[in-house]
Image (cartoon, one colour):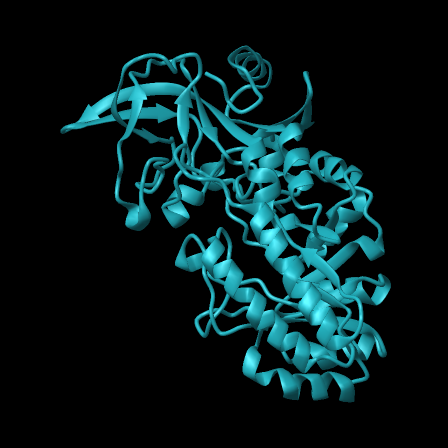
Length: 408
């Protein structure tokens, strides 16, 4: 079984050395995805996809900047070597830790709600800001990741932009950027709609805009038969839009893109060991030691992840359901939207086999939990032929380390 750039022998060695479940990331894929986006002036990695420090340091070495959505993400960015002017802080509200952070660090802010204007002006009078605009429509791979339209909490409603511009001016802030992000894992058709909407918003804010951000949401091919996203076409379209806007506004514009999933998803694997098999009625189950505490996307969104059995690609297959150890019926990796169990064609599994769940570099480790009091899995980074541990597995002591015992 070939898993992107990682071969069977290496995967078996890593599982033997570090145990399972185990996240494995390969840097070559990230470098390749960054190169695909060099047509943008600024590539700004969306930290929420994966905040492993070693991964962030490596991304930083490629000249990529970051988009953070919390004070914690900014802290991780600093730890990874990013400096203030390489970080954008995007949020729809200021919690107290966020405002306290901004009081002490000169980080560019992307405002997603009207009340943030005066709150920010009170601590950073006279500063430049970006406005995140909700264009009135959105699209993602699931309704829960749709970040545009009236059912989304994200962004400032597009029809309010003239009054918001006056409000920022009255507060002493200068709007230098316009940003739109309509959803995660969207498709080319819907992402292309953003061009006209962002252009219209930039023209309304014409006096001061110097940067346009196309947002993120670029999809990846989770299924083996999916056609990869046409990044070159996407980039060329946005370059045309930027050229038209520059002609209209009479000034040069910096064009940013904000990928998270696109940079890291395909670089990540989740290795898990088969610990049992059984049949319930006419359904055959493969029971593995990874659960939705390690990868929640199938349980949360009905998301598809390709699954293979290490070293068994050439063997006959039959329909089987892959499920984890958690005390939840939703702990199934082969399910569709609505929790419908969808058996997957896989070779007959045996106890001790190593399963590989693909494309987990985004929204797996970053959404991991200690549900059922299970330790967070270890993470390994592979650069070329060299593999190294970049996050150790939690220990039982770690699980209770932050709790305060009540004295009798």
